Image 1 (cartoon, rainbow, N blue to C red):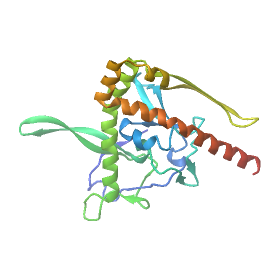
Image 2 (cartoon, helix red, strand yellow; image 1 turned 60 degrees about the vertical axis):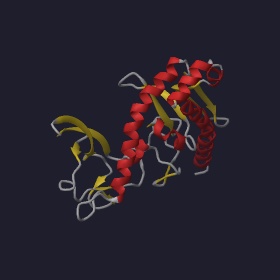
Image 3 (cartoon, helix red, strand yellow; image 1 turned 30 degrees about the vertical axis):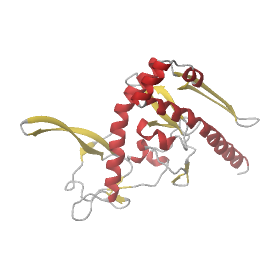
Length: 246
């Protein structure tokens, strides 16, 4: 159960965050939420798909990490074997919340950082310091702030982008049925992708709308990310061979 607190340099002056990776931190997951603000980075290393948000019912993007709900093929010996770390992972125990403040007589909702004090990465004796000894933000917290801004902007951008894709029929079901070797086969259901054929036959008006809104690039980045399935397959096959000879 999460226990969120508004982050401040008095209550949390000794707060540290463990930044290594492992199952004990919840990193053994087959997919993570992805945001349009990071598609350019993600598409270099991760396959990007869409799925229905189980809570809200709308579309959300995900980066595929493995072929099972608890399989992360990027996770190995406390390391994350990729150059880019998805924002949903990089943010650690932090999230953006909102606080009402009165500015010049006007009530405004301003973004603030909260921390989950029950998160397994939260510590006081090891990890990255959140605040400097004199109370200022540490370089780690500055990086986290950048990640959280990207997530906040990505949530807003994703809602509009995915609705635009859906409106013109670009989001279609994808069946992943992969034969890894003679005795191992994996199938994933519930995922959707950008329909390349549908994209190539959109009329000029639809293409122009997607281009002017900046969404067309996102569609092509999702398509480009599909080559990373080969990387996942290769790593899965390597681990299967390793298990056979263990």
